[in-house]
Length: 440
Image (cartoon, rainbow, N blue to C red; front, top):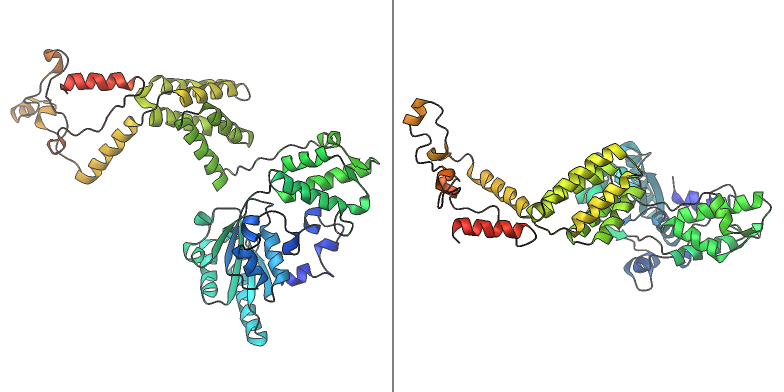
């Protein structure tokens, strides 16, 4: 359907009192937009492109409630182009072909170009995105795609190369408060007709609970207003919000980019020996509903990958935390998670064990199955001993516990060093012992 049909003044969510407040209050012009000044501020490329009606194909990427669909509708109001929209959730290749065919027909009969808005474009599979690609490339349609997922992973590379990516940021709390104040005062589209007053603290709390999401902020305000009206009150108070059970919603999609960003911050805080940041990011995951077993698995990996022999107790503590959590569960298990997290964060760090196996694997990949030196082979039979198996092997215990100068790698890799202990923590003692044994 034409987006113009959906947003025309005589048939719009803005004048439908039963429509959600967030839809009614959706900005219609650049002047009404709040936030995203990095994209639509004075002198910015996107603002000028909209004002001059020369918008390119683009991908609007950002968290929910940051204005992706709003920007598309602003373009619809500002542009002379024909607008049409598809939902990637509900539309298939036949719908896409119909939209393209209609775009061709309008171009032929009226000379107007078509801007195709695809909501949740990341939900189009590869075949659907491939079907769209040639029409964007030939200019049959100008694409505006909206996605909450990182386009690098969610959008076909060929399609991505033909569109500009604009990242929308979560709205700041003061920006959300401005939207809430506007909704309370607007008698045409908002709640102005209800004549409600609001304690400034409650608007600040609503903004804080919304976590940068304008849609959530307006939805909470609408619920709070209806609750107050039902109780015959004309002022929105903090106590009313608490009665509604208002709680901050944390953005953490277990399969999306937000998940991996928080996990990355968690691991890098541990590696950077910052226990405060490590605990914060760990709790961000857990409070958002992450499985504690996932966090424990990351701690177990970290204990060997990033600490290793600099503090061998780190792995013991990680294993103990995993076992203790299996018995305790939540919320008592948080004690073991926090103890393990803070211990690993403050422990001396070494990735020498990780580098050792990685470099050994690289040599195996390069050299294949190198022969085991005869001196290291097991002479399990008389015939094998006669063939030289085990010949020349020096028994370390006969030489005081260490056979000085002996080698154990394949001949092609003799004297190669994979494990290079650091001077951190207990690994410093290991390094010193190896130097003495080797006479270095």
